[in-house]
Amino acid sequence: MSWGTELWDQFDNLEKHTQWGIDTLEKCIKFVKERTEIELSYAKQLRNLSKKYQPKKNSKEEEEYKYTSCKAFISTLNEMNDYAGQHEVISENMASQIIVDLARYVQELKQERKSNFHDGRKAQQHIETCWKQLESSKRRFERDCKEADRAQQYFEKMDADINVTKADVEKARQQAQIRHQMAEDSKADYSSILQKFNHEQHEYYHTHIPNIFQKIQEMEERRIVRIGESMKTYAEVDRQVIPIIGKCLDGIVKAAESIDQKNDSQLVIEAYKSGFEPPGDIEFEDYTQPMKRTVSDNSLSNSRGEGKPDLKFGGKSKGKLWPFIKKNKLSLKLGATPEDFSNLPPEQRRKKLQQKVDELSKEIQKEMDQRDAITKMKDVYLKNPQMGDPASLDHKLAEVSQNIEKLRLETQKFEAWLAEVEGRLPARSEQARRQSGLYDSQNPPTVNNCAQDRESPDGSYTEEQSQESEVKVLATDFDDEFDDEEPLPAIGTCKALYTFEGQNEGTISVVEGETLYVIEEDKGDGWTRIRRNEDEEGYVPTSYVEVYLDKNAKGAKTYI
Image 1 (cartoon, rainbow, N blue to C red):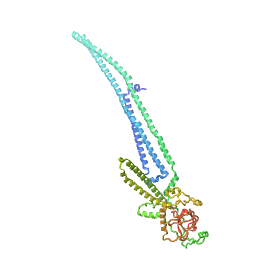
Image 2 (cartoon, rainbow, N blue to C red):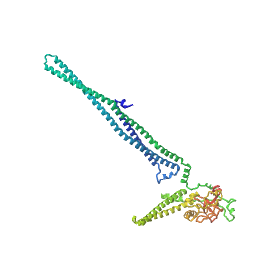
Image 3 (cartoon, rainbow, N blue to C red):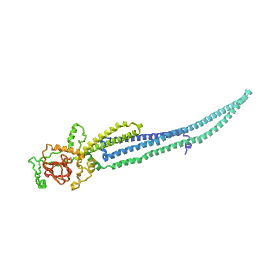
Image 4 (cartoon, rainbow, N blue to C red):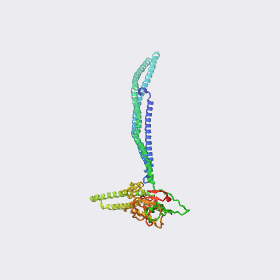
């Protein structure tokens, strides 16, 4: 199967077909180019989409991404960003491995096609020239033959005419001979040219054209093979990124599987827990008759002997308000958030203060690192004066030292507030107490099952020198309530689980096992107001006592 033998007379059609082949190749290049543009656009849109939903730094939205579901979402965004990168790789590889190579090949193909068809046209022109020469010699031979016949007829006519002179006859005879000789020469020339033309024609149709058409056929077949290779490359470029895309998708699946609903629920508790305890039962206030309460047979007076006053029930205890609520009202009036976060519930306030302390600690460390760097640079200048003046760093060193001192004072202020909050909160975990700086390594003895979950006597309520600011704040609040207040009636009894040394104003010392009157419940600040006798009353940590409220007052409710 050869174009040279099968399509020897289809020169023009082959020229059109090969041009169509080049156009098809250019169409493939255009297709791949548009695909690369789509891939780049898609990758850009994916990156923008991922960036759009990324949490903004230093915003409330960033804080919300502590939940595992939100972390999984962030991981998905990051994986999508990597996913977009693979589409950029597809675009780059298609551009370098297909578009560039095909564009260069098209130029080579056009040049080769041009050369082959130029040779074909040249052969065509040569055979056409030979054909014209043959036609010219043939017409000349035909003309000379006719002229020779006319000259022969004229000679014969003159020779037959008796009236014509001998000279005229001789002249006609010579003319006929000349014409006959010219016809013979034309015949020989025509024969020679015809023979040459047949040879050229045979060469044209059996040698030149087959060779040229064979080259064109090979060129076209190479073009077809090249299209096939480009299509394979097109698929391979996609196939190469499939494993990485698969890893991106696996990363999304892994992120989804890492979601822990229980952990998220616990984070919600930590984020919004106020630190308050649920309110107790509301007393029934009977306005039809005065309320009179008597001491039962198992009252405190019988258990502690004579000389003790009877329990006096009646009246209504004055509820102790949280200090931060008062401050919060003031801050709301001023339209500003208090520096000590007293507008927040205890647990949230503690977290904010702890966060502020941590931030200040980081800033202090940063300033200290800067001070060390300046000190080292100063030492270098001292050893090598040509590098710089050591005195020029003194001002900067003093400025950094001042900043460190300011930050330390600020840290101490927030740590004092944090200590205040720690003293007001209910018992927390050992790790939290360590973080707040109120933890003592000694553990309390276990009294009974109901006291096992309490905070240790040496826990949040240790009265070390470092907590003086905390106790002073508490004492101030206690004084506000003692001033101009009528003695409160007892609403129950309590038993001291541990010994408590009430060394600060507003507190009262108790001995382990001692039974006392309860005159005010814990209002959520971690303290219970008790009375030993008419002259001795004060606050003790709620976790240090076991409270037994009067059934007629608050119901059989026990606080541990």
